[in-house]
Image (cartoon, rainbow, N blue to C red; front, side):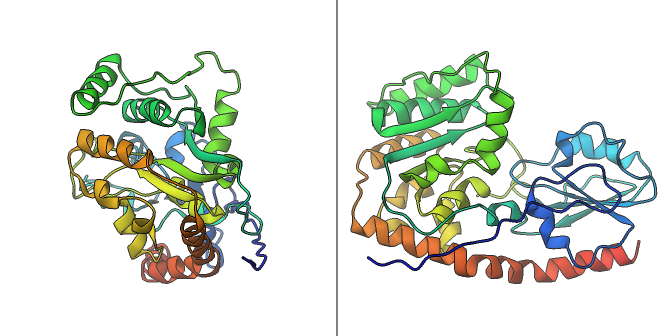
Length: 345
């Protein structure tokens, strides 16, 4: 099958005027073209507790991509007595802030639109890949079962940076899954003293696409599998980040390991063909334990064939040729609202 070659330029992010923090994530690319000297951009500001770089006379636009918003940290920022706009896919939590302006914007994950990649390539050497950065209990258990089912067909990472789980939670999930299925948990080989953990963690999330590009299937460990106990009005039922869009961008098939409705959301965004490859019915199961058990059944049946290639290529083309413009169009009204907020401050 002849494929036209496609080369996409890679944006390295935008350094806000007067800022000493280089924004490595291109989420802020959306704001270029109309910002003035009063505005600084901070990307994932919750990760940088030392905010002395912020000019006291500037407006701060804080964009979040990939993780939840740290509300405690936002409260601390509110005490700085300068206007700070939080741009987030999450709705306003209803906290009485003095200086925080909450601006909800869908598709805030612009970082996912700038992966470096070459022409579509179907000469792959892996069947499954699974990249894991922050290891929560559900990710840890899920990866263990994926290893049990797929064996040597799975290439994975599992770093201990920001290791976030408890033995009690982990054992409960393992026992629950084993009680409703015949799958046996295999413990992932996590290194406890990985000197390169931070470096590998960072590149895995934002830049590290080689295992994904070289695999037919990417088991996409999304940020959340459960609702995490958050209010449903604040946390959407389906939380999709760059982790899911990455395989679509480089011509691999995303096997959704996250909250319910992942494939339905991607279909609404213009991607296609998921139900021709995998039994997507598991993705509508609300019970978290049963949903994982059914996913384990589904991944054991996946094959590499021409249908898979066609679906991956169609989604690769949509991502590269149309998705950026689609996202820009969806965001345009919210961006206009944001411009008006800034102009009135």
